Amino acid sequence: MATQSSREAWFSQYQDFDRDDGKQLIGPDGFFRLCEALKYSMDGLEPLVLLWKLGAKELGTVELESWDREVRAMGATDNATLKRAVDAAVSKFTTDFASYKDFYRQVFLYLRSQNQRIQVETAKTALPLITNQHWLFMRFVKFLEAQGPKMATMTRDQWNLLLDLSRSVDAEFSGYSKEEAWPSLFDDFYDWVREHPAPKPIDVTSSPK
Image (tube, rainbow, N blue to C red; front, top):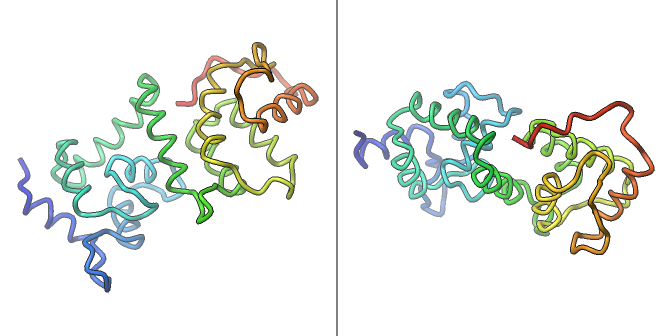
């Protein structure tokens, strides 16, 4: 079993030593090198899952304290065992909604801008990636594209509730009611879906993960 000193030595392989604030952390460059070592594409889902599993608070940044705590919790002692733990977490998303929901919500915190919102252009790229191209999210991306420049950002509440919406409606939005406490954005989405039926039957049996 790895000791604290061995975990710190492992961490130091990717640590940013050029900081002026004295913080012990892996920065974006070190995180990129870690993903390379794990053979993860930066365009894939796994780097985001890796950040989440390592308890990262910001995109591309991992603090020593969370590294030590989380790799110990995963039983990871080297890159190979860390990769197995991350890959297992991805596989578990299909059966453990609570775990996936926690990850999904954390992604917003990674991708939000300084105004605490997520840019629509960012959301349009991230949602298909983290939801396995689930039909509702793909339709929502189309809806966002149709809004053009009049909609530039999404709030955290909208992002989080979109996942709940995906488990509440079918392809025709049967059961959706504007009287319920959904964000007004979803009312607009509902109207758009009714006006723009899917060009072909949608497989509604799949889940976001």
